Length: 116
Image (cartoon, rainbow, N blue to C red; front, side):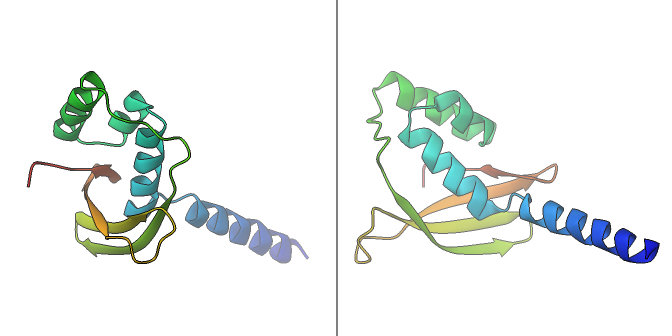
């Protein structure tokens, strides 16, 4: 009986830890949400320092916020400590795919956008 309880607790903990893991797609989705709501400081927390500087410029130049914006994560590609997340803005399946570049730093995925 006791081993069943231990097994159940361990199973719940493992499921909980897995569900809470932040992969690059989760970070990208949260980043898009924060930007669309003009939560620039929160978006910067999800970003590298260089991307944070770009966000500061966006903020100063009047970035157009849209809290009703919808995003669909389409694909994620992970290569070691780098990832590319493809997404669509809106619900139109024919809309152009856009990408967000991320890097993993100290175990945390950060948006790493640069002028390309």
